[in-house]
Length: 223
Image (cartoon, rainbow, N blue to C red):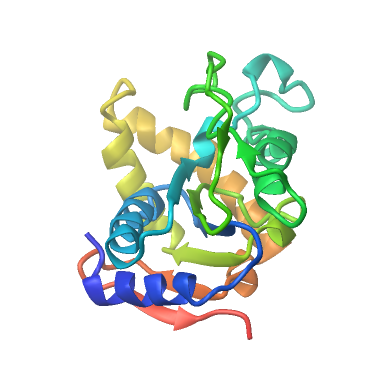
């Protein structure tokens, strides 16, 4: 669990944003950095502090169907980075409807988190003063970055990603060793591509160093 002080400061930053449409907030960062937990905790605090609608969305539910990832080998770092996320659906089904001039009609996901099956998610209509709180890897890519109104990046080094990710994912893989191999050969190299090409920390308003889960450190991002 993140420090309540850090989560409170993040909530202050979100609630200070004034837009004539729903405020679109994202939490980016590498695998196993703690994005989802932080987003869930932030959603709780936001709902305690305001009566505005808080829309909680995981971008893992906007993945490209595996059969459509054809440019690179499916298990390669390149496929993971370049092909996993359905960027067009994130824009057209979520961010543009909630942005300037949008009709506020959105869906919260397109496919199951493993991307194997389509979701029958209903079209919902957001309140004009709603807060969208999304989390997901690669969410500050050039195709998406300008569609967010507030950007948070959760930083941990890749050795931490490897340790936490292998420990977490062994539950659904054959073993901790198999999970570690997947991180070494696919996830971490793909996420290095992202960091090297995009430098996502430089695009975020706030950066959370989550190396110590009990004592996260908040710092200002871009000016």
